[in-house]
Length: 578
Image 1: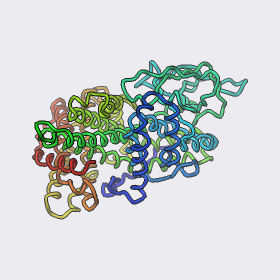
Image 2: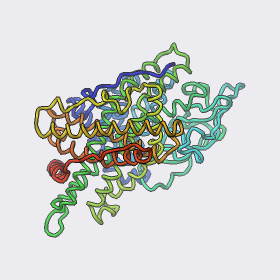
Image 3: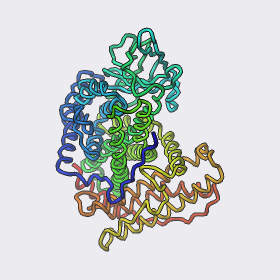
Image 4: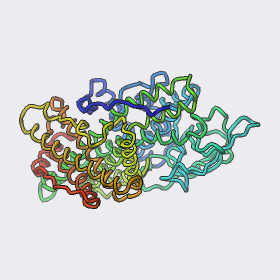
């Protein structure tokens, strides 16, 4: 089956948080209320490993519809749109380790069954998973196969006499292993290659190791999974024999985007905690919120959250056509199993670069914001009595799992080169440097400071794009297919591409939100200015380094004055945050 081709949504149709309807606000409020009233007050019990509390919260989340927010109604879901799903994922991200657990459950563990299972598997598992009656787990990583997870040693063999498969091996660092009722397990099927199976917890020979002693995310159970000649019926096969790599990679593509939303939830909570503390804490007779360097921190924290959030929500909209097409194919009963897996996996993999770079940007913004929030708390930020200390511990893992940020940078550039070779992509059909990829959004606005700032930022964006195109062409001419092996260059190209997409997303959101409620309207010019400056710092600067290395001349880019902009953003945060 051919690669699925979809049209990229125009920027003036980009999905943004400001597009919320009353229904969106209701589901978001439900999710945030669940986080604040049900989960966070029970964090001590969750971190102590209280399984009863964890399972009760899963059932509550299921009753509220939060697990199956975008799952078809036929399988117990609410079947809501990408904006609703994004709002819920971000809200649940505020629940720290519990958010990791339920993220795994509703993402990489549930999606293989939804998209690659047969009707019997979907009917048997999805309603219980959506209701929170059963917890699911995704078993891919092994002791000797982390970033190189597709080359694990867990084996599967076909027992013709008994009409079953026999699985043997060990999986490592498996989220929800201790509490799951079902596992999606990947194994090397003799003679066929990596294959996926749905394995029930009660199968003889399956055992779970001791709980891992982790630095953070203690509220998310993690343990090894041991498979000692575990017999599973033929009906446990997921998708088609030898196609497990397609299942694993395509659902990880969605998981990386979902991880970005989780990280944004943590980021938002850290900003709230930091702002509230800065208003309460007094030194030298005044609140520390009055100090310029504290206000500068809050300004950067809020501005970078805005940019990363803009990119993640835009990608949610761009992923939607592929997910819709994947589900249409998955529900067809007339397709050959192998052709179906190829088609579904292709549809789910339409935005590899943007999903990978969203994960990188959101988790690195999360790390920056939480670190600054600890700094604002001073010594108290390092004390376990304060929530921000736990968040500091919890944040470190997000740059490692769902593919390390280094692996995701490599994946993004590989996908970019693949797209250029095929001249097709759902998310960037004409490449990142195409003028058609960035129509002016400023022209939709009346003359004034906001329009002038957007025009300046768009000028910087066009200059970055032009340089990116020149640098990439020169690097390809020099290194050819070996460019992907030049990891120092790849890292810089990935960062430039990431900030091109992020700045474009932020500017589009500001232009589209000029008449809406919230920061896109109230702080449009300020946020655009800081995003512009950050894109030059974190995107153009590494690109200029590659330009020097491959012999492409580049002119420096000017940036706007940020000091006044950061002051205004900080004042807004301190005034609005409760």
